[in-house]
Image 1 (cartoon, rainbow, N blue to C red):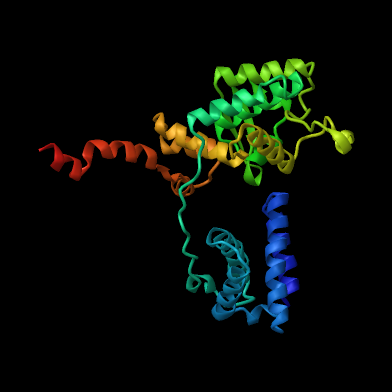
Image 2 (image 1 turned 90 degrees about the vertical axis):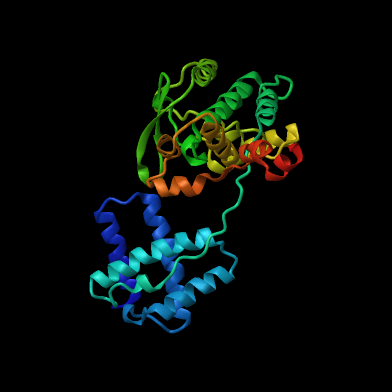
Length: 306
């Protein structure tokens, strides 16, 4: 079967099982790149797909500067397509079993210290820098990020009606909904912010564009992920602290672990479908605590005390 025909049939199969629009678009982008790679090598049939071709494609992708983590994401989506083709009889079955995963490097995730968190919250609330209404929005936004570890996209997709006291309904990846709890301090900050907005309707976006300068026409519309990143990065620049929404997510996870949270609870808050994903995500946290504990168990220190 022609690869383009197989791709369209595969996309229809994903629609048939109600995959999210973003998931469908990601499949189109990733598999479209695969088809262009194969076309450049004059391969246009599903029967042309074999293990050497798949390995060559992943190697080519890595050579373009793609990280091992992203490469494994590509491999996963590629695998879904290839396995589907195998089940449909369009290519050999179980090809992906011979295509190994990339070796991912595990980095120490950067988090904020308590002092940095306090400094950034103080900067956000400074009335000399922001209009009071904007300052309250930024404060509520930072407290929400610190309290829940939400992804930037999840924060941007929140509506006013998603707030229910100390519970918030979150729409995560794949349009999966979950409820997370917030602290009283965060709830009050959000309520105060909404009061300053004169109690918007339930279907209104929770966080909105400021619409400064040339973007005045966008004021009041839902904030996008890029705008959220830029706003928080500008705040960090004023405070002299490197920051981003994802660093606040890391900080939530690190602080929660330090305060005794179990991994299962963190899996729910972080919106991970697999506990293994949470375990990998949390790898690298706790090194500061281990360093402090070293003072009590250092072998060399014990020798010197005797």
